[in-house]
Amino acid sequence: MAAESTALAAEGASQSVIQRLKQFNKMLVFIMILDIVMVVVTFCIPELKGRSLEEVDQLFASGISLRKLQAVG
Image (tube, rainbow, N blue to C red; front, side, top):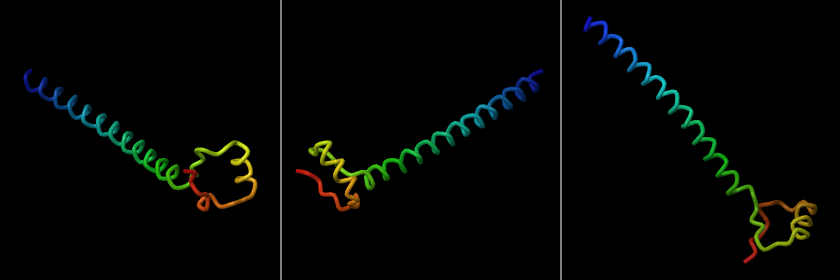
């Protein structure tokens, strides 16, 4: 009787560990995606603070590389 309950407890514990590892893997994938998005936003999206909508429209219409845009102080 005691051996059966110990076996059931061990089986339940191993399933719990497996479920936690699956959740941890999902969290790691989410963190990696967030890191990629952070890098893309930091280096590929220009700073447009201080510019009017018309200026922004002209910048994108003129075809200027986003890397060449200067930040407005």
